[in-house]
Image (cartoon, rainbow, N blue to C red; front, side, top):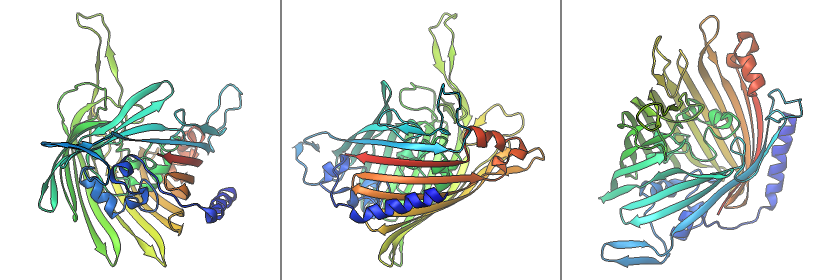
Amino acid sequence: MKKIVLSIAGVMAIAAFAPEASALPVFARQTGMACSACHFQHFPLLNGFGRSFKAGGFTMMGAQAKVEGDNLSIPAELNMAVLTSMGYIKSNQTADATGMAKNYGNGVWGVPGQGAGGSGEASLFFGGHVSDFAGFLSELGFGGANAAIGSAKLPILFPVGDSRIGFVPFATNGQGASYGMETLNTGANAIHMMSNTVGPNGEFAGAMSAQQYIGTNTNATGVAFVGTNDMGFVNVTKFNQTGPGAGGYGSLGSTYARLAGTFDVAGWDSAVGIQSWSGSSLSTAGLGQNMVLATLAANTAQSATTVGTMNTSKATAIDGQMQGDIGGLPVGFYASYARAPGQALGSVITNSYNAGSLTRSSFNIDAEVGVLPGVATIGAAVRQGKSGVADAAGNNLTDNAYFLTATYKLQQNMLARLSYVAQSGGYWNAANGVGGTNATVTGSKTTMLNMYVLF
């Protein structure tokens, strides 16, 4: 722990020599504005202007040249951006001592496109302004020798007075049903740097966000029906739990509902919201979401067919945030609570957000301070969680955590981040016959050093 604190102090000391610059990723190119125009402290956190831009469906243009004609107005160039990261992860799980393989206990390096635990990603984003009432955003992810669409959405939001009303068809591998429309920074949607792919087992996101702790970042394909204005937004989404490339699998049997209000409290940019997931739908997501693909053998008259599993989508959440400044230093406070009920005895349909027999829940508080405004931050988060797993006496095993982090911007589009998380509670207690495996196999304490680059 002492080494972690000293490392964070080192990052803060280096930050005193930070340069100033502006970044030009996909929407910066479209609007002609620097990254800091939309982001609070650092990407991907949004400020009020960034929320408005996103809620408007990515339609706002700047000085960029356009191709225009009757009922036509598109950018003269297709705007694109690259997000990549590199880093190092070390956990306290039992290290491999055979010399034949390495794991997070040994320490693992990630490089762009060939990363581990989110420490070496490479993604290409493209999209932007389609018309005055429509926009587009898609992400192409690269890993090893493969490239695939990770997420895509087409907001079609018509101006109605000071509001926008419309719909957002979308598909995503791993950002969940909230991907259609979300603007808060609480982890209500699994954005980069706050998703369950960050860390060997999602421990960093799970420490900061209750929604991410219960695993709402499933695959999802659906349509979000959205209304937005300066006072907040409402999002009612019909979806199934499949991602891009999964094919046409049945109806949109699950429902996601989101209501969020935004307002000013004594100069603090504030918001509160509620979320609900319900219904059942086909699921073809991967490991960690309790779903498995099955392939029908070709010994029938039909060709081989890939099918999915019917899963329920049952969870609720409440969250809130306040962003402002104290003594001239920017500060953000974030809180969230989420719960997913357990499985009924004898149930053959799994809840995507909780495969256990008891309720899985979490209460999270997260704070971040800009110790050098626009350059460096330090932050901390605390989780009080229930794992949904019963011990021998039938008690719901606790799953708590605390999280420490520091960030440093070399440029507006280059962010270094050092993070440390420690997990504890009955779920990690070897005496229960459960935590012993968790602690040795997945690790209860993890350190991660990353560099994120966006251009």
